[in-house]
Length: 195
Figure (cartoon, one colour):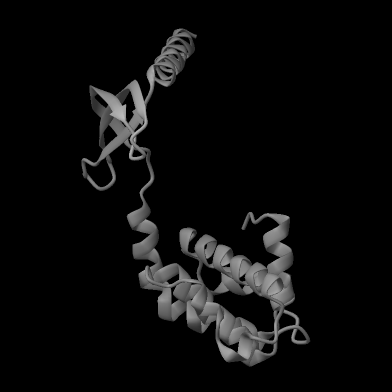
């Protein structure tokens, strides 16, 4: 598995029984799964009383490393031997490997559903609409007399077949800059396809 050095170091620290005893390791592992799979989870997952003695910076680093590894394992649909090999390379003992595998198995289906819902492609713009807005006053009653454009991009998400809209407001200079960049991108694409 290709993980950054920062993530690898954080994950290897989880293997050290001197830094994280078995109970603390289990709590942190469950917190990592919960933060990934529960949409309402927040930093409170790390507020367990048995985790209070750990420096918050260290705790968040290890939590992020565990969550990153869990996502990578789920993305690759790792089996037991793949997980065990990587965990052994990170100096995990057999007890922690077994704890990790058990927790991974318990949450595997939910993790695959989560990863499948994210999608694999960028949205495709199907239509653009705009309107001119003229701002006369602000909420402080200052006179403004400024035109602004409200732009709405209709997009199609090919993975989920949804059709959300992306709306934004911009002034004349920002709109001209956007149009110029889109023209540059179009010209670059034309040159690339002619090669």
